[in-house]
Figure 1: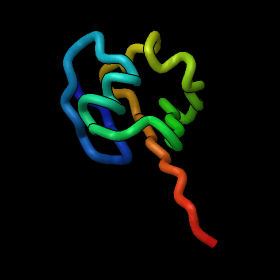
Figure 2 (figure 1 turned 180 degrees about the vertical axis):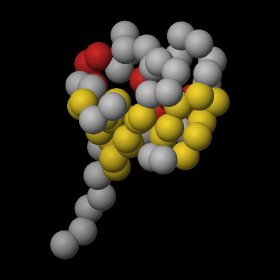
Figure 3 (figure 1 turned 60 degrees about the vertical axis):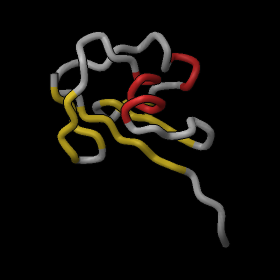
Length: 67
């Protein structure tokens, strides 16, 4: 199935969770990351149990330090 991740089409297998996208597909360290799916924030404690659906729009926001 396909989803949009930060406006880029991404092909993922059925049954993929938010955690799978972050760790396996995007290969990101989940620390300092926020995720929204279809304009709704997904709390980090729900990443393992929240499956991404076909045509979902995922926004990945990474915190950065600076001044």
